[in-house]
Image 1 (cartoon, rainbow, N blue to C red):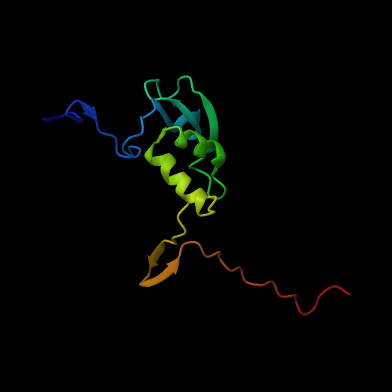
Image 2: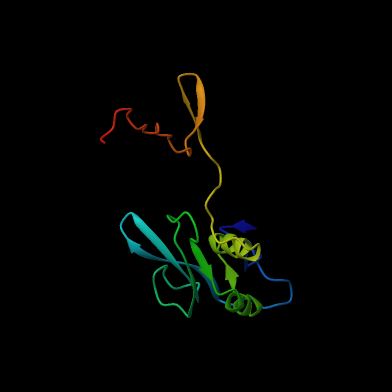
Length: 141
């Protein structure tokens, strides 16, 4: 009988720990901070029943999605301690942990968009070249 995530009265979690280990009621997730239209997040270990911006057990890092470079920081040793105790990771935090393990400090895409203009393709990221100013031939003496 499969109803609303229940299978034989056991909750199904996407990144459930190895069989035989008890699952902890702690989840590592993002806690929103910042202002309207300027979000930034704190990565926290919290009870999974608490609200998104409610109390937390430990602050583990931060994530600023609007920054292009160095847009997150994690205390990896503390994340691993919580994971060893059975804490689960949210999808976003799992992505950040994977990037931190690879040594990346940014989640920004490195793709360059191409813009068609007059039948020619130009890279949008290229700076415009300004013509050099040449000195006039009959300058001041």
